[in-house]
Length: 570
Image 1 (spheres, rainbow, N blue to C red):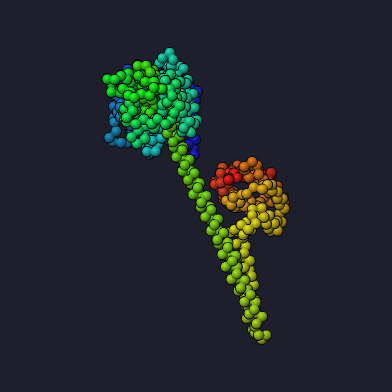
Image 2 (cartoon, rainbow, N blue to C red):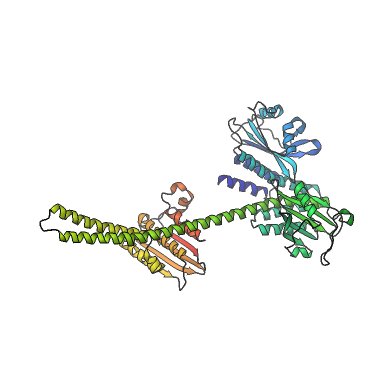
């Protein structure tokens, strides 16, 4: 959970409204702590000088280097002096180097020696298939090594910070750069905060349409031998339809395939009869296209879709339009993949919930079966045994040995005790009254038993009207009430308990409240070490399995309240 929190903080910082310097400063610090490193540096590629320029630098306070008092911001490192670094950027593949490796590059280990580092992880900052910089994480401890999971995590987060750096470059490059960057920040936050797949692809199409002012923008995903249209926006009739899939017979199929295969934008400046892309049999209500651009949606080099824009004029899409669509695509691809992963995770959660619900139902059915067998078969057998022993005791001759008479009497008494134990166990497993007379009668019966057993007074109030509660809900309510009463008897030291069951809309609301000593409920649920039993956890799980929720409200000296809300399904 700590790592997840750190990742969320990093992604939040990247998509925040801070300046780039502030974002990168936070990023380097949090990345250092996330992977257990001792230092972190972000570089930007400077193609004209064939060098790397330091954008941000962080060193853990626990580590001392020979250049602690020197600022490295803006420092340049010519790539010709560091062939391994140049190779990382060229191949766009992370690489680790350690000083104790005899085969390590001398130039790189010399740099490590100068700063007293024992190892470095170099991760290229890749945006739209181009290495725009480098993320370097340093180790001071010779025993530490970067794991594969840490390398993969750094690679994913490096892609996100690369987007922020690239957006900043766009911001300063042109007269409209400021507006574009602000729009991208808003779009990035909007996409990052959304997990609904259909809403994300619709927003991506809308954002792209507004940014480049094309006649039509579509988001398509590869599916078998065609592209499936998932969202559209624009001034074309096809923008209102989500049923036109793009097959190999369509003229735009080829550019879409090329964009996905080559992982780069494909721009068609003019579609004319001699280009091989001419439109044939064009419907009268749909205007003919003259130009298009197809931008791949890539997340970690995986194609999740293609963003396509169309225009009725030739040479419509300029370099700035393509750059804007590429920037949008980089953010959209991550958001789309996150939404897909969330959808898959939600489906797995629902499947697990269904399995758990079936398991609980099977458990309750097995309890019911064993309860019946204890009550019917074992109970009848023990009753018959007691009767036979009583008959035998009365049939003994008057001159029978005292020991024999005593043994038969003890056996009869043992049969009675065992019969009572079997009946009690049968009731604990599953009270027959719940099936025969219903939930309310079962709760009243259980509360009467509780009062007789503990001497604690219970006030029971019910207001459910004429509704019918399904069996799963009945057994869940019954189990929660019995567990809550048991906890009150064991721990609360209360002299009064209130149980209330009522209907609120389509929700059944249950509360069990006592005036006992209470406890720190928040600390109990947040710290597994505080849990001495799993009763409260089991109650919460039962409620959540039926789509409900359970809260325990308690503080020392203020009593305890268990509040449960369960949906009343049809």
